[in-house]
Structures are given as structure tokens and as C-alpha cells.
Length: 217
Image 1 (cartoon, rainbow, N blue to C red):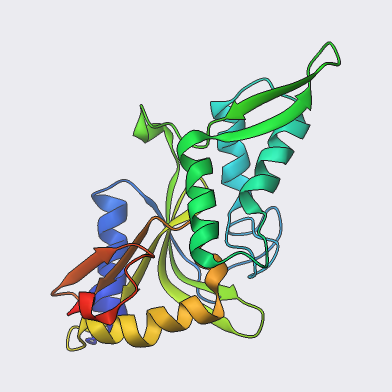
Image 2 (image 1 turned 135 degrees about the horizontal axis):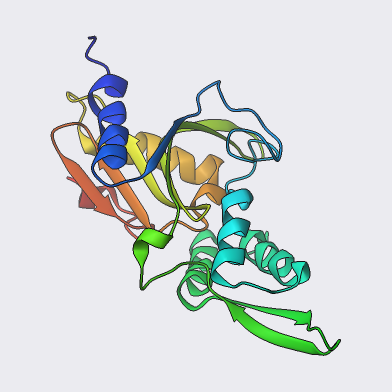
């Protein structure tokens, strides 16, 4: 088996997440089909939220509501403001993840009501949907990038993992790859909770607020 970052780090990491942690695993590189019935349900490679599992979990965790309630929730979760900074957007999405999404809809009596919808089952974690996607293409305004591993929980890209070959140091992953992703496909990190760099020997874990390469030494 050749010593590549895929066979030594990326594939091994995905297999561990699948076999030991119970995540589903998908290899998307040049295999993904688009559309509602496609591999991940994405309409195109510009989408970073998997609305198919997201909506399924919204219905499961918040049953018996009209479609407009779920539509409103999905809209709020995926909506962005162009003038807002990445960290501000991430903070806003974190609020929805933690506290739920407040939606408005008409009940059976035709009354306009408000209700907060849960995105995750925090009490019973196994009730959530965990999906590990390798080699995920993401298109930004100008460029297209392929992420090593993106971990989706109930359709939201909460985990980003950059894998390097065992002879590469993690600082290179931060300075070269991660910084490039932030510049070219920032929307991949709107919902992000965990950033991880690994080379098969060492690993570093952090968040979007870890912005200086010195912290990766």
C-alpha cells in the first residue's frame, strides 16, 4: 500500500469514525451525484448544508408541524448575510444550534404562532445523524476546493479535518491549506464547531477563533 496522506491518515480517520464512533462514511470525490435523490442531496457543490437529513431530523425532533415551519427553519439555518464576518456568522449559527430555531407558522385553527425547533437531540446523542464525508468538493465565489474530511451532524458541517502526510508538520496544514479554505470557501465554516489537523502521528484540535499559526507549533 503506498504511503500517501489518503491511505495513512484520511482513510484511516474515516474508518475509525465509522467503525469505532458509529458515523456513516461516504467517499465523495468524483462520485457525488446532485439533486434531491443524489449522494448527499445537494443541489450543487456550492451547498454546504445537507438539507435532506436536516429536514428529516427537524421533523423527527419537532413532529406534527406544518411544512412552513420546517421550511422556515431550514431557511434560517442556511441563510447568510454577505456583509457579516465569518466569525459573526459562526456565532449566529451556534446560537441556533444551541438554542434551536424560532419559527412562525399558522396552527390548525389558522392562528399565527411561534415555536422554537430543536436541531439536535442533546439528551440522547445516538438519536442524531452522523455522517463523515471524504474528499468533498465545495465551490466558492471564484474557486473550488476539495476538503479532506467534513463531519456532518444532522446535515450541518460541524467538523473539518485537514489530513497531511506523516512527514508533513501540522503548521503547514494551518498556513497553507486551512488559510486557503477560509479565503476561498468561507461558507464551509459558517456552522463549524471543530477544526482538526492530523498527520498520522500528531493531531491538533481547535476552533475558528484559533487564527494564529503559532498555536499549531
